[in-house]
Length: 238
Image 1 (cartoon, rainbow, N blue to C red):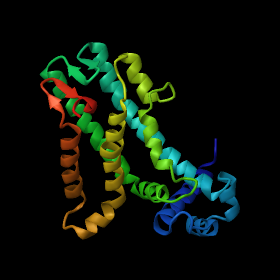
Image 2 (image 1 turned 180 degrees about the vertical axis):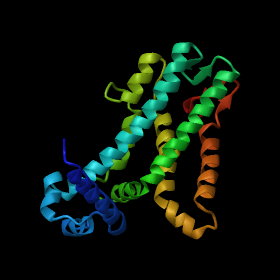
Image 3 (image 1 turned 90 degrees about the vertical axis):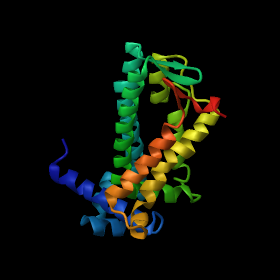
Image 4 (image 1 turned 120 degrees about the vertical axis):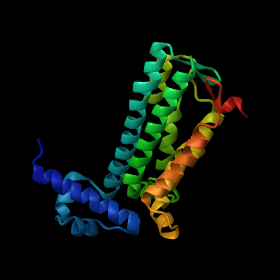
């Protein structure tokens, strides 16, 4: 097991990197500056990470792993469980719930998931800002943001897709649904987290007021396609 002191040093390196990358930009930040901000010697940084690029790789990987973990918890505890109980059936163009109570329960759980995901991206908004900035450059990490699309691929490597498909083979991700998910489901979280602090400065709202207002709009967009006891898939609405 790694000594506690070493763990703390590694965390200081990561926290200093996040602060500097988000404030100065990844390219403009030097390893010497990270060492100074973390109060460690430069050699210790290279003990944990081969390069500055590897630090950013680790931050991005950790972000996506955590987002995937949140999604998988919701899927197992709600979607898969409801399919097993017979209260949810995934059809070609909709999520069909056995009755109004089943739909109501799903919406309640989905709301909790949305709030948890929003709180996570807000807590890690400096990393989100770095990710967004790097996506606009022609560098190694320019396509990192599009790793979100990996969560929508129909293959066995995508744990989210494979888990739901194994429970109900009617589940699929049509192309227009992927586009909608990326720009209207994923990007609102990314943009909100990235611009949260600046919006707060420009508005007269506090943290909770901004969060509450955004959640209201987000839920309206997410659940706009409810019809009876069904949540319609987007590709049938176009």
